[in-house]
Structures are given as C-alpha cells and as structure tokens.
Image (cartoon, rainbow, N blue to C red; front, side, top):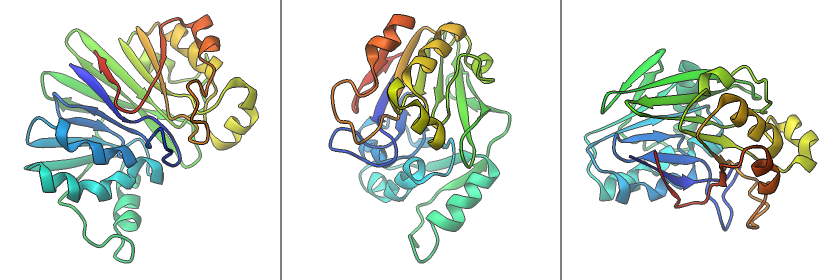
Length: 246
C-alpha cells in the first residue's frame, strides 16, 4: 500500500505546493480535499472514492468543486464525503451555495461515526485537535500497517492527541513554520518543527512526514529539517507527487 501526496502545502497554492490532499489509492481513501485534488484522477483504481475532511477551512475543502474534472476522465460510481456534521453543513451551505458553486457534484454527505470500516479490513478513527474553528485528526489501521494524519493544530510533546497516534508506522503531521516563528504559529493555530518532532518521538511512530508547509517559502527546507532530525531522525519533508510506502 502507498500514500500519495497530491498537495503538501497550506493556506494557498504556491509554485511548489498545492494545499492538503492525501490519496491512498488502493482502498480509495482521500484525506482532505485541497487544491491538490485536481491531480487525483489518474491514480484512482476503483469505482468508489471516500473523502475524509479534517475541517471546513477553504484550503482543505476547495478541491470538492474540482470533482467534475475528475468525473470527466474517471468513472466513479460513488463519492462519499465524511466529516463531522457541522463541517458537512458548512460545505453544503457555503461552498456549494447557489451564488458560489451551484453545480454540485454527485456527493454523498456522511457524518462521521466513531469508527469507519475501510476496504481490506481497515478502520479509520478520528480525534479532536485544537485549532481556530475546530479540526480533527485521523488514524487509519490495517492488519500490519497504520498511519495518522494530523493537520491544522499547534503541536506539543504533551498534546492530548499523542495517545491516538501512538505506534503508527507513518505520521503525516503539519509543520507550517520553523521554530523562529513560534509566536505567529500559535496565533494562527499551527505548528513549528521542534514540538512536532518531540511529539513523534513520544508517540513512538515509525516515520514522520512534515506537510501543510508555509506557501510563502518555496525553498528546499522551509521548516528546519535538521532541528527535527536531531530529535526524531526518521523525518522527511513532504513534496507534491511524493509516494510513501506503508
């Protein structure tokens, strides 16, 4: 099984990164629907797509309006969007408001239960995160493999969600800014690099992939990888198009 990074940035697209969209092609699972969603069609294997939204901020949901292009080139019998009820309501009432985007794609809106059954004997669970307006993270487990996706929150080594990600093979975690911009990160509800690495170490995850990167910094190292690797050596910065085996 592999994880495909369709969008590794945050807030708005840049010349290097689109906004959050993670695809797991084999089970037909997508985590968030940012601007990177336009890249999904060639990688979809089956006829079903299940999209799980962390929250309703535009950089995480705007790609839902791109699904007509996906359907133009890939036949899908079913597209389901899973999220907390208030997130589904916001998407339905605002993103697909008649004055903004009246041609709503054929989506099934599915409120998230505590546990979602996934193909290949998998499960998905969600947990609360601290972020302005609210957000949630996801943990996905299959026999012999697991991953967690955490974005739009302010990390710390003792963050309450650490127990939900404990022991996963792969942690995809936001890292918007380097340590030097910690105050701005806190104001906007985002993370800097050292606390993310400390959290990964405490949770004893297998690998750490940093994403939801500041779009204004298009350099090769916008977050300070050396600082992360000094704490948690198995750290990598996500790039659009990256394929990660799990």
